[in-house]
Length: 155
Image 1: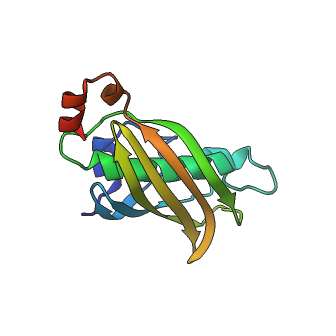
Image 2: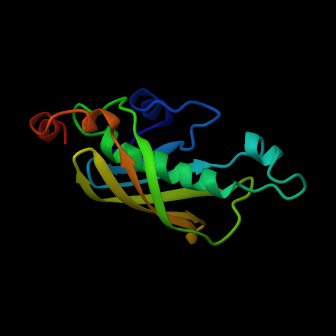
C-alpha cells in the first residue's frame, strides 16, 4: 500500500504546520512502513532553529518517526482517525543534522501490540545515511477504557 499526502490527511489528525510526513511509499498495516518528509527551506522551524545554521530540531525528528509509525496502525480496519499518544521513547539518537533541502526517509517496524499499547523501532535516513533513530510506545486511550473483550475486538 502507498499513501499520498492527501490520503494521509484523511486517516490521521495532524495538520500543517505540524504534519511531519509527505508520503508513505510502502505500508504493511500492523507491521511496517517506509515514507518521507521533504524539508523545504521555508519550514517554520528552520526560521528559529537556528538562525544562520537552520536544522530540524531533534524532537521534531522523533515526532516525524512517531507520526509515520502511527500510520502502521491507522491503516488497519476500524482505526482511521484514531488518536494516539506517545507514552515513552528510548534509545533516541541523532547522528547528523537535517537541513533545508534534505529528504528525510523514515522506516518503522511495529514490534509489539497489546491492549492499546503499540511499540515501534524507527530510523531516519538522508541520502542512505542514518540521521536519527528511536524506540517508542504509543497508546490508544480509548482501548484503555474498554473491557478486555472489547479491547480484543479492537486490536
